[in-house]
Image (cartoon, rainbow, N blue to C red; front, side):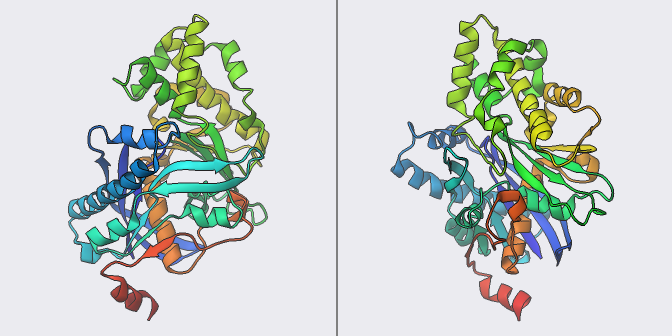
Length: 392
């Protein structure tokens, strides 16, 4: 099947759209990216999304409109990747849309009681004519899970090593890891959870320091100019989230713009320069990842495979290499995947599995009570033909 995956991550910086060819069934499932693009948001739209993620700025009417506006943009991204790939909408079977997470309701004990992803799937199906599956995370939460990280299921299917343990570490706005046992190990199960902040605190601090002129630390330049404050990093590492046992998830409601601004104010009040603040917050992301491996990893990974925007931050990658001795730190490109589009591929794969009435989660990864078929199916103009093609 040809399936398009759509993703807007915690950083809300653009829409990733990937046209994939997906065949087979687990455990012999294959996913090949035919074409992928990054579809930029219009000027000012990222700010609308990020404000929608903050209770003090969002309102029900603004979220309502944002939900539909994002549906329009996701539809445009879909048509753009179709055109760039040299195919037509009639050639595409399904769309899998993650949408945009605006709130993840984590209770004090760590259980997730609710999650909200916006981006109206009905708009995508209407504009493209392609059957669309969205809202994947809610079913896992309804089944007692964390609703994340859903990428772990795709990692389990596609990225196990024949003989070595791997840690698949995504560093988007939030960091998440999947520990994968080797293929020869028929007894161990994968383990996945959010490690803590990825780029969210770094991006938020840079935006605060520059009054919004910059949205991230390009190439880790600020962190490389600065010096890590070890004492402050030690204090920051005492945040209770890091000691919380998996399964666990987090988001911008905890590690977001509010915390980033507070960190900048605290650093400045203590005489720490702005570059040293960015260096220390970058160190916090690296230290929280290494600490999560030491506390909760089922085995020392021989390979750590980095994805997400953080994989392109040399200062962050260098810190990880130092903090993870004995592990080879690689990128998704080193194992044949495009890290820029990996999460879009994941939601194409999950849509494929949902259409075939197969679970898209693993309880050992999300903490759900049972495997569940994920997502909500919105029929497109191709719905009847798709049923005949795949089910009759």
